[in-house]
Image (cartoon, rainbow, N blue to C red; front, side, top):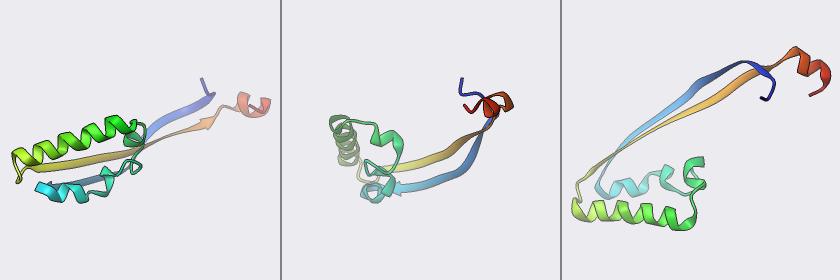
Length: 87
C-alpha cells in the first residue's frame, strides 16, 4: 500500500534477561514508556499489570521471571514509479 518494494522484516536486537523475586521490579523495560507495547496501554491497564506482578511476588517471593524482547524493523525500497511520480 505504501508503494514499497523488496519489503522485509529484520531482527535488529534481542534483549534477554532473567529476574528472581523483587529484582524484576528493577527491569528498566517495565517502565511504561520503555517499550511501545507498554506505552500504548492506558494507565489503568498498566497499573493492573503491575498489580498482577505484585500478586505473583506475594504468592512466591522467589518466582523467576524472564524477559525476551525482540526488536525488529521493516525495511523496503521506494518503487521507481512512485519515486518518479513524487509520492
